[in-house]
Amino acid sequence: MSYLEGTIGYAIRRAQMAVFDDIFRAFGEHKITTAEFSVLAIVADNPGINQADLALSLGVERPRMVPIINRLEESGLASRLVDGQDGRTRRIHLTRQGEKLLEILKARFAEHQARMLKRLRAGTPDGILSDLWKLAGR
Amino acid sequence: MSYLEGTIGYAIRRAQMAVFDDIFRAFGEHKITTAEFSVLAIVADNPGINQADLALSLGVERPRMVPIINRLEESGLASRLVDGQDGRTRRIHLTRQGEKLLEILKARFAEHQARMLKRLRAGTPDGILSDLWKLAGR
DNA sequence: TATTGTTATACTCTATAACTATA
DNA sequence: TATAGTTATAGAGTATAACAATA
Image (tube, rainbow over all chains, first blue to last red; front, side):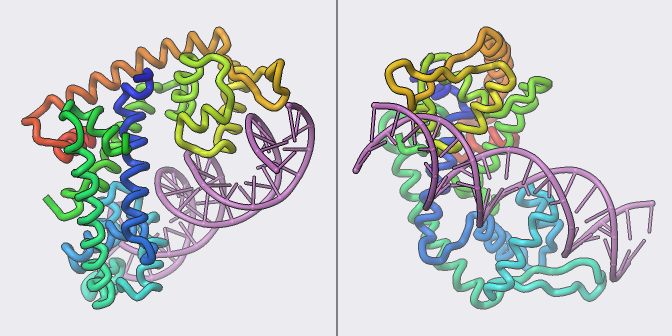
């Protein structure tokens, strides 16, 4: 094992590349990014959440939300609703179509996660580095 | 734990964000990116490696190497040497300065990795998800 | 003054395709 | 034809700063 392969930083990067690749393939024809999927999932669990809180949940800055929610809105998956009490905040909800798509994506995601857990079960358990490299597909 | 927090994909993204953040802070005033550090480390272990093989090692496309090695060369950390036998390939070597900086960065990196391993040892061991969230700092 | 959402801007990371020089 | 490196280009993803509307 090279120096780099013994570092958590490098191993986690390679693992994330492989995991995200598998998710993207799992979503297939729906062409939904992991960021969009995350927003759909959070909104489903927190109907009416605003964009600032969404950004906080995802650990990104507020402006990041604008293009993501724009695209979800344009695709008819989510909607912005101006709050009755506070005209500044937009409350995000899933449309019926968004809820339906999320169910499909969650099923695909479950298959993906099962594949990843299967990789982890392969070989002998041996700590985080070994786990990360298993996720990376090695 | 929310639906998203139970997914490997989301946990690994948050973990990578936290790990890379810690590395960047560890490198501090040297302002070296993880990609540059990776190249320095691979070249140190494989003096004379060419750019195509570097790209292969890192799992990125060849054009990615150009700006990275440009910057290392401009900073006086690495050098391109046209191969004597094959005029197409450039053999990458570290300069004395590059070797010296790499030693410093490796020391900083060791402290970083110790911090990460300390996080992993916190609490009860409970599989990859728990490990990833520990890396993420939660 | 402070906050929500937005716009403007820029920078990094990344890939693909096409080019050049060599083989 | 094929390969190594490069250039050109484009598209994500991200952040910061400044703005408009609202509180």
